[in-house]
Image (cartoon, rainbow, N blue to C red; front, side, top):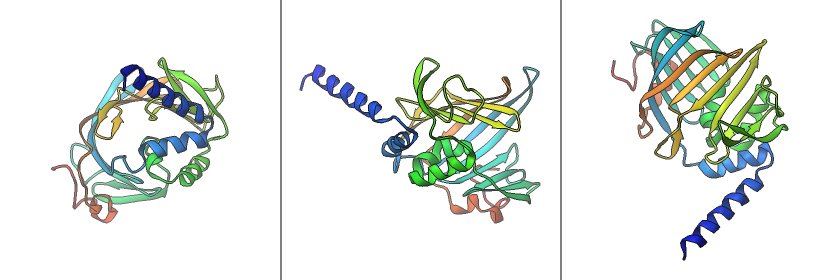
Length: 246
């Protein structure tokens, strides 16, 4: 088979896939087809944070994060694990201070949904969560983000205030996310994606509020090949077990 013929088949296949994606539902089906059953089960990393005030770095911090997809996330605020932080378990979040549970509430982890759970959950459940969060999933379009073609769910062209997310057309990962909460427009950028095993992982997350940068996150010691015990995400075991050496 000639190289030109192979390239022609690839281009035709890609064009056919893009042509089929014309709505939020068809986008979710393609994301599910591409990565369902292939996405990470567990992943851990060290998150390096910078907090900004008046466009200058006001604080640096380290978080230790562990995921189990779908639905589970543990975040320990460094430098000590098992003291302060939180656990997400299936749309509930548990908050800890000095090793003790101080609060619990129902909450969908929106970033986790868009960057991981969206590939692991069944499509009707993803649609239900998007509706609960307030996305207008009937609004769907193609656009460009940093010179790359993307799909946009939740807002028409020129609208940068409604709840919406932007998906890279080629790799089908989230690159931009906008939340409008009580008049505060929070915009999140996912960038510098690196191939890591079965998927591309962003190396930097930038968070802005009303147009001003408030936080950046960078990842270190990324491990998508780890197997975590269930106790890591058990609120009753918060201060007793951890994936990161104390």
